[in-house]
Image 1 (cartoon, rainbow, N blue to C red):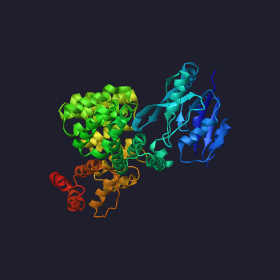
Image 2 (cartoon, helix red, strand yellow):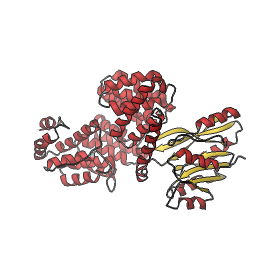
Image 3 (tube, rainbow, N blue to C red):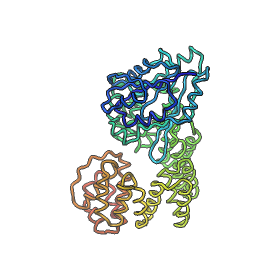
Image 4 (spheres, one colour):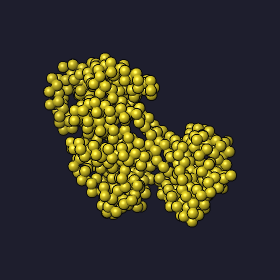
Amino acid sequence: MSSISIVMIVKDEAEMAPGFIESVKGLWDELVVVDTGSTDGTPEVFAAAGAKIVHHPWADDFAEARNVSLAHANGDWVLVLDADERVSPAFIKAFLARCEEPSVGALTVRMSNPLPYGHRRDSWLLRAWRRDDAVRFRHAIHEDASSDVARMLFSTKRTIERVDAPVEHLGYVRTRAAAKDKKRRDLALLERTLAKEPHDFYAHLKLLELSRFWRDSVLWSESARRAIDALEAKGPEALAGVPWGGELIALVSEGLFRADSAAGLAFLERWEPHLVAGAPFFHRRAQHHEAMGDAARATADFSRCLELGELLGDHQLSTVRPRLGLARLSLMAGKAAEALGHVDEALEVQPRDPEALVAGAALRLQLEGQAGLDAWVAEHARRHGPSPELAWAVGDAALTLGRVEQAIPALRRAAGVPPSGPAALRLAQALLADGQLAPAEQLTRSLLDSEPEAGLGVLLFDLLQNRDTALDLDLTPETAHASMRHWVDALIRSRKREWVSQLRQNAAAVGTVFPWLDDYLRRSA
């Protein structure tokens, strides 16, 4: 029977280590743990479980540390895992069975990354192979051993296969990532990589993904421009046959052309002939077509995302998001029932998606009235269980239709105790619409550190009360304008004429940022 060496690098993972150790019971014969400078007792936790501990100073190079772990492995197979990953009994059974197949030389695993509201992003990663001293990692960040594994497979005439049971990755849940300061670390390593090799387009992709993850619009636009410059220097052939090329181009387009769909379309169409088909590309192009009012082309691209299906690990972009795009197009055409059909299909894939739930609640209320909405909520809760997202949808739909008294309790349930997240932001707007100025402001200010759009609420409250505002908001212009309208709509719903009048008096103070504000308030009077 083949022996298995799990190899890993760690630093300050005492919190995650027990869960990891429990999940891999029965999987390993040897556990090699390279500790790069922990101060929280991580080595002791792993040593108590029987691991071989190797102390090695961190050199700002993930590949170098990974190679130290490989050098200390003695099993027939090596399996690369991290402390923030979890395997299941199904994975262990399938993995061990694959290792006993003589024709198999390497294995990819399905890494499953949890995203907010029940979404997951899955990707296939090379994580295991028959131990070979010639196999080594490359790249200081997002390290990779695939080229050496490929050579090993060619020379031994073995194959690479998959283990279908997923490995769950917990490490980039936003709060944990923030606590470990991963943004600064990853940014520094990517910058160092690009300083050495400006045409490392995989590093450009990872820099854009980092910008998106942290919702850093300034870094996103700067990274997109930098990627374009590198692409222009190398030419279209730079991404020919590259499986993630479409995602890189889509992220560049989103970073630079959110507000200029004509330019975004021209950029995407220039690159399309050179790219492997993928949902990120077609979804971004569909959004540009939608923004320009070209429903036929938008429909075609959203439908292409659905056709691609499992070709992309990000199931949102090949299932839920294009369905909701088609729903928006149906609404634009006045086909509410057709739109609801698309929303229901999205909810079958992801029952807790907030955007789909909000759309479903609003359309049910519009088409079937309160009784229809109540019946739908009850049936959804029966099938999928009650959830904060469902309560958020009910509250949001009620607030949109001006039913403030119905919206507030639903949004309180959604926001939790203490109130947090986007649902809490919507609750603050509902409180404002109900005339509860002080509670609305207090809640909004409590959300400033976690919800960037709360800053626009604070701005509105300061304008209402003749106070100066000193806020540095990290929001795209599109997001800022849309969010400000939500706050102003809530103010208008309060029917407090004196508040609307006060805001109009001070609208000139933000006129360069929101030139539409005075006219918007005037028409509401």
